[in-house]
Length: 456
Ligand code: GAP
Image: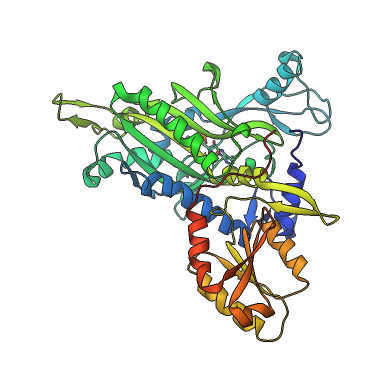
């Protein structure tokens, strides 16, 4: 990443400084792999999710929405294979530090370093490691008031199963038949063993998952379709194409339900890592729930007059992980008038604040007019009004949170009702009549956008 100045430490620091994301329960020393999102973080997450919904629902006719429960019947996880198969090989350091690791991760690192994976030791203190044991990633809890009589339930580790168990219901009411998809965004929970690299891997996280049900003979065509669609979603939102790749899984990496999977990977500062997976789940899930719930889950094909179990192509993404990629890809520094300017070159539709409005000075009726303009611009999207401190500082603050446009009211505005519009990326300032601002920004938000960050 020769010309890219971004590091994970810079992202973590910016997120904390500007209140995007910070450790949860920090006054108690924090809790491992768990983060809270502040004002700008929430706005950014909302925009990421809105773009995903738009791509799934508004831009096509063959996907419907769902919001299923986090706590499902425990048998769901029996049938889905998560109770038996959703585990990682855990080893613990028997030496000084007693830390826990995923054996498969240590072995992969050893192979990459040209070392014998059978001889791995604790990467922290060099101690001997325990025998591996399979560690189920699902969080358990209970329904009921008395613990002994309570029934064990699980926090869902993926949103997908809610879609499979509701498939019959949705089929009956949505007036859709395969090929069609059911999309959902919601929280999932995993008792992850390994350190998280900020919000890349957390214990609770939101997923954006879509299960696309197809006639079995069409699964390859739709698998290719969704791989491309999902890759393109990131580039259309400004992620540099040379920092994205599609990587097919090797046979031994496949999840228990998948016959083929390709990951959309992003070149994070920690190296190429999974952003989202596109999996061919075949008829695994519907067949398992059919058996588990003792109910037929099938579709009637009018043409062949036969019933069949649809196959499923699943693009599954993480909201936090996508957000981290957008932040990393947008982060830039450049020298302006002898100072280093930090700027988030976010796609304008992802930017938490679309337009910031400033009075140049806090007098002569400028604040009142600036507030009036800000009120008019609310219809374009999230806005901010700021009158504190030097104008240069106000611009820098907006640069750091990725605000694409700043509008400044000055003495000329009171004479001719024009303002300056400053562009975050080019730093160009143009004079625009107040009456044209809404159309200008609405038009720019609807346009395609290419990151001005250099490709490596
Ligand atoms: N339903 C399929 C499924 O859950 P996955 O590859 O395990 O597949 C899909 O998860 C996506 O969810 C990942 O690509 C990642 O973006 C996100 N994800 C998974 N585990 C995560 C974690 N512990 N923290 C943050 N995001 C996670």
